[in-house]
Length: 285
Image (cartoon, rainbow, N blue to C red):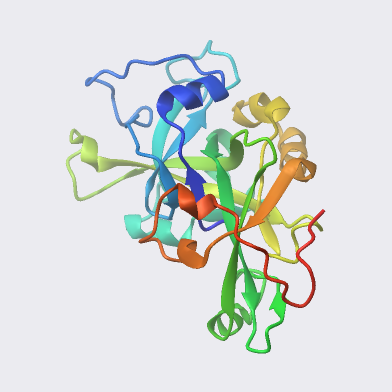
């Protein structure tokens, strides 16, 4: 799963990193047609429910910009935690921060967004937690969808956090999907009536990471950005992208347990700490 990440780059830095044109968003931009763009501060402990930067391709066919190229073109802000268009309550998004690659094309909450509204979520690193039992032995973290004993195991274990990033510190491009939701209690002419949200797509952890957690986010390599963002990409192309996370480029650092609380923030959360040898040395690659 992916429940926390770091993203410190500003808009200009992300435009350079993702080859985006600089954009001027007018006050007249229609929030019903395309997500907004807001200035966000650096955040080293991004949690569900927060606004996040997202890189989008062209709008789906039939919207403005039909002739735009399929690759990265737009930087926007979305709220993390996908709210399906048919949801009655925006708070359902807190339960939909991740979508499993194995089922994202079929699940009613995700399939429409996966088919036509895919995005990249820039990140300096993502965090994952290994569980440490009372006997001092470490075991891989799990998610409720994959482990019926998840809550019980989590409750009786300490959590050891790790930050996963590219070894050259290039930004990660987390595979995401996004959706528009209309608040039925707000007038449609009010911009607040329209909420744009996203979810991170996850997959089975690569062997080198599986001892930390059984899931990991799908990371899209630069060469696959265009295919991922193109609304016309087919099932085979998308399956290829979701299987192409470049794990061989990853570096993994044990970091301070300060990251366990969303009240803590700042670049120090990414500072490596001396590895704790629990049940064996922490050798990943």
